[in-house]
Image (cartoon, rainbow, N blue to C red; front, side, top):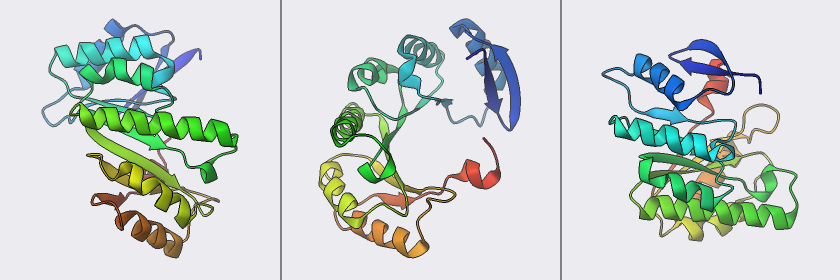
Length: 199
């Protein structure tokens, strides 16, 4: 990637890659204000740049800035190294119906995602387990997943896909009911950035 975009409050700024942690912190400080919730590190996939992300999270934490990491959780090992500097973590769970990966690859990915969720929760990180649901997502998939999340301190977000694969309201209600049978903290949140036309 030749350049990256810094996006905050709807403003965009382009910068040449690779950027340094020092440069990024100058930008973060300029944007940080009284009402700022946290520094959101998202992607692409942050775990693909573990050294940079860990250094950035550490720098933010050193200045008292809360850090919010959004990840697909493909590597528990990489995620674990970042946890000491993470305050909030949103970790995707990619169900088999969500993508064209092999069954073995899908199982390994889900196991890594669940391990990241469990570890974040155990270490006091405010944890969000985000499950993107499509028209093809079955109630059985949610019923198989729910027991794995039942003992974890996490908010489970069912996020309906946007566009051609989106579930009907009836399907979404059915999946929400299936998750709520075993889990206490389940919410449905649409992809707000898609609705707003951002990204």
